[in-house]
Length: 262
Image 1 (cartoon, rainbow, N blue to C red):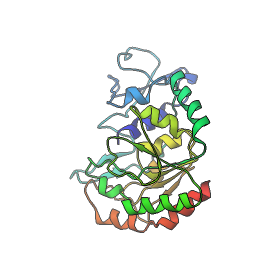
Image 2 (image 1 turned 30 degrees about the horizontal axis):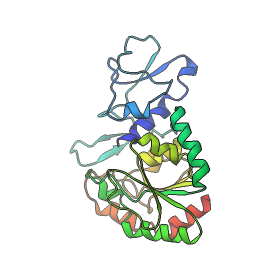
Image 3 (image 1 turned 90 degrees about the vertical axis):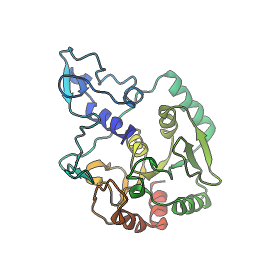
Image 4 (image 1 turned 120 degrees about the vertical axis):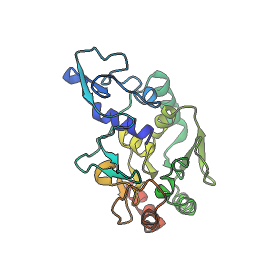
């Protein structure tokens, strides 16, 4: 999942320092951080860094690349099997002075807006199963703009799609993105790092889950999680079940859900 997994980690670690412990993500012997941990865990007082393995306050959590609490691969390696005994907890971010400066400047200059993310992680085999479709996102943006809603889209390395007539921002780090996201009235887009960030920031969201991943495991109660009425199959490859689930999520449904949150 990438950024999303590490944001989930901040939820697992929440409140650890108050209890006199530190969350250690690893195998019980070694703290294992992936490429996104440094950025997401920045300034977080609840999480132990690699190299702190001898600390006597560690609370080990088996949450790292290759070992996630919420799922595991099927024996034939063609789908994720979901752990329905797990339910994700909103994470948290600890912004520094520069990031808070960006938030304060943006609050004064931007006004109220909704973030729409029309892209999915195109490089992954699951991308088709998480894609609601370019035309749907364009139509949604048009309808919201007709209602006077300002739309913001972030430009990043996976921005194959850019919506017309919206306000765009390009940042160098994901933390800059989430700093601005913290000011949004709502987020609309696929399940992933952005929807986990929205939950951590207490930003309302309409999340297009489709038939790939179950809201019961990885969705947040404060969000509207749309599945198209499908059970989550977890297919790691392009799947007609997931495509049909996304097709059952109408633009009107997402439009009304978004307006309802505003």
